Each structure stands twice: as C-alpha cells, then as structure tokens.
Amino acid sequence: MAQAVQGFRAFRVYLEMIKIEHSIFALPFAMLGMVWAANGWPVWRVFGLIVLAMVSCRSAAMAYNRIADRDLDALNPRTQTRALPAGLLGLRQANLFLYGSCVLFFLSAWALNPLALALSPVALGVTLFYSLTKRYTPLCHFVLGLSLGIAPAAAWIATTGALHPAILPITVGVMLWTAGFDIVYALQDEEFDRAHGLRSLPETLGKPTALALSRLCHVAAVAMLAFGGVLAGAGPAYFVGVGLAALLLAYEQSLVKPEDLRKVNVAFFTMNGFVSLGVFAFALADVLLRR
Image 1 (cartoon, rainbow, N blue to C red):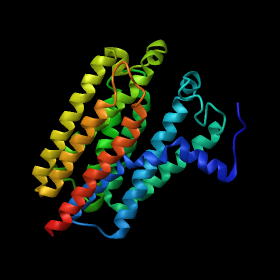
Image 2: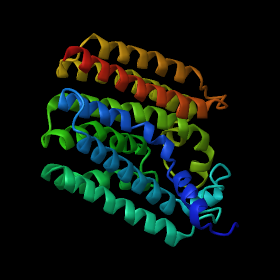
Image 3: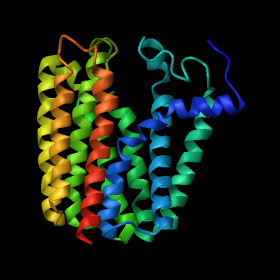
C-alpha cells in the first residue's frame, strides 16, 4: 500500500477521488434550470453560488461513496487503485474533505435564498444515500439518477426562490438518463456484485435484460426532456438539442453489447458529457434567441 500523500499532490488526489471532471454530467442540466428560471443569464453572484452548491454537494457525495465503499473497492480489481484502498489518502483526510464539502454546500444554499437553504438537507441526503442503496436494492441506479435529476429543479429554486412545474419533467428526464448510463457502467461489475452480495440490475436481471432496460430509460429520458420543453414554452432550438441528444444516446447504446464491454468507458464518460453539454447549449441559445 502506498504512503498517504501531502501538499499539492494530495489536492490532485482529492480531485481524482471525486472525479471532478464528471461534474460535467449534472452541471449543464442545472444551468438549464437556471437560464429557464431567469429567462436568460442570471446575475453572476447567483451563477457562482449555484456552481459552488453543485460542485460541493457532488464532492460530498463522491467522498462519502469512496469512504463507504473503501473495503469493497479494495477487493475489486477495477477499483483497487482508488485513493483510499491504494493508501494515497487516509480515512481522516477523506472525512475532513467530506465535512468541508458539506459546509460549503450549506453555506452556498444559505447565501442563495431561504427555500434553497430549507431544502438543502434533502438534496444532500439523497446524494449521500445513494452510496448505501446498492447494498439493498437493484434500483440503486434510479436513486443515483434522482441525485442528479434534482439539479435542474434545485437551480430553478436557487434562481427564483420558488419551484415551477415546468422543470419537473427535466428532473425526471435527467433521472432516467442517469439511471440508463449507470446501468451500462454497472455491467462491468455483474460478477463482482453477485459474488459480494451487492445489488444492481445487471446482477439481478443479467446483462442482456439490464441493457434493454437501460435503452428504455434513455428513450423515456428523451421524451421527458421534450415534454419539459413544451411546458416551459421552449423554442425550436431547444428541441433540436433534444433531438441531437437522442442521436447521441442511440450511438452510446450501440457501443455496448452484453458480450462486448470494451467501449463502456467511451459510452459512459465521453458520450454523456456531450449529451448534457449539448442540451444546455441549445437551451441557452433558444432562450437568447427568443429574448
């Protein structure tokens, strides 16, 4: 086991532990909720606080996930090099990072508005709770989906201090999109999960059926994103973005087959970043064009 790192190298290990680059999955959909709520770009203070709240909440969730799963990660060849099982970070360091992230999240919610602060324990609780669900239910993918799905609704609340029903289909759409790609990612661990009493849809249903369900989730996700656009009165540019997202998701699904998982990482990391960024870019363009 490696010796725990210190200084700037420790900072880099923290960023790797929480996969900071994967904030790109949920953040663009939060930005969608923000620009719809503001009918454009809000004041920079609100934007900065939303980004801080999103990143700190996700960082807390990822840190808790790594802490809760450290013994399992040490057994899984795919995850043995993560910071805690590899000894690059100590448990105390990880816990301090978790607590600091929670404090930053609550402070940013407090600085936004009273409703954001009142609901912040709920949002944090959902994101932290996901790490435990794989021990009890194969529906854990949908809990993860909900933890990302609340981002656009949370951003709407952060921007206006209230919640509008137009953003709720986007929440459902993001939940289904996330559950769909998390099922794909979980295909890699079907045998490990079954051997160690962990739950997932691949472990419960087998790879072919789980992959079929993932595809249904993505079809339903596109439908909900389109429905949200209708409720919000979005223009043509937004629906072009949803259409392109549908094509990207179809391509993502074509990369993975039950008997061939070599392209899971491309499907999971690369394609989903394009989906979220693309939908937001077209949503922003649509708002700006209609002003």
